[in-house]
Image (tube, rainbow, N blue to C red; front, side, top):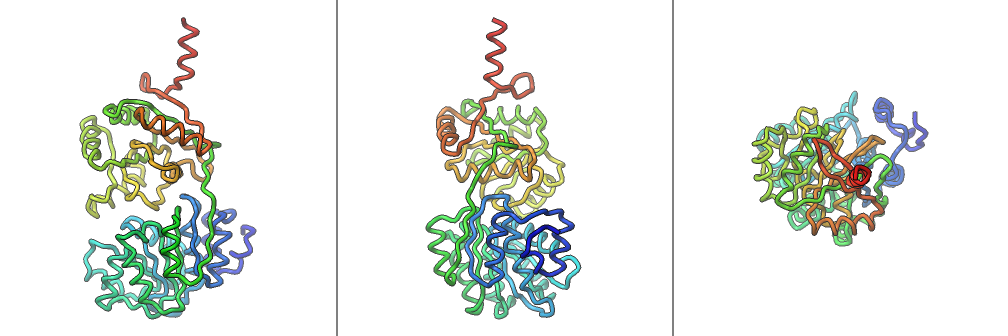
Amino acid sequence: MANWSTLETMKPSLQEVWKESGFQAPTSIQERAIPLILEGKDVICESPTGTGKTLTYLFPVLEKLDESKNGVQAVILAPSRELVMQINDEVRKWTKGTKIVSASFIGGANVKKQVEKLKEKPQIVIGTTGRIVELIKIKKLKMHEVKMVVVDEADQLVSHEHINNVQAIIKSTLKDRQVLFISATITPDSEKTAKTIMNDPQIIRVKEEISQSNTEHIYFPCEQRDKIDVLRKIMYTEPTRVLAFISNLEKLSEIEAKLAYNNLEFAVLAGEANKQERKESMKKFRAGKIPLLLTTDVAARGLDIPEVSHVIHFDFPKTTTQYLHRSGRTGRMGKAGTVISIVNSREESFLRKMGHDLGITFTKKRLHGGKIVDVTEERKTQRKKG
């Protein structure tokens, strides 16, 4: 058992799964936030990608849940179908051997089938905001016994698109409920909005950091029109599992067409794809059946994709936060990772500034003979030959 006093006070089932998972110690956000949440306080948590935010709220939710009671006691809100399903999978993992029942509810799915799920009397409900509101309005989802509401990826869910739904869901519960806002980024505006629907929340921030001890940051300068070709050539160097971020959705169909023409295996995770396509893309990529997943920031938000060997910024991030969020998906848990930026001349100058701001050394590379080579070393070799 890890030397974590808080865990030792929790349900034996949670301690058992923790032990089976091989965890040695809690992350910083878990150690700081979980005791406060267990005390019943409303909490706003800001912590980087890959720091165990899901367990930060899941542990207290499961610990405080009354297994002898049927009916919804906790509601977890998430912005995407994929994240809802991922959270539900995590709930099932940590409730193994218990009587706790969870259910997921997402937009686009058949409402009648989802209503059937509620007849199983789940104690934990995970869903997208629109579908949860819909189920409340048709009086199929009873909220009068809900003790906790978790807003995951909170900065996204307090946007204009979702905030009315979030407010409606929280207001449908009793006044003594506990509200948690969890995100990799909490902007001042997000924090201000959160406070209007929370009760004197405690705010916990874990500083965003990026380590170069096991992650290499490299870049390829090229003309904008040559980016797809550079991406194609990078894939010929046979990286194992690559997550490539595309900001320009209009460009996405062109990238797909050119990669398909060159017989490269890849999948796409974008908001425009239908539910089944997105599910299939994630399944194949997670299983290692395809080496490349093209995605947008929104589609990949919050998803836990293991064993990512490379992150590629096809379109260079506009902010340091965006760079950190994307890049944090590789080099996890002490494993080696590579972050590749494909940059045009304007982006290259921005990359240099970002390197200075983040304290990252970006190494310039080029592709030669099907391999990634260091430009500096290549110049030295050429000088020796000369």
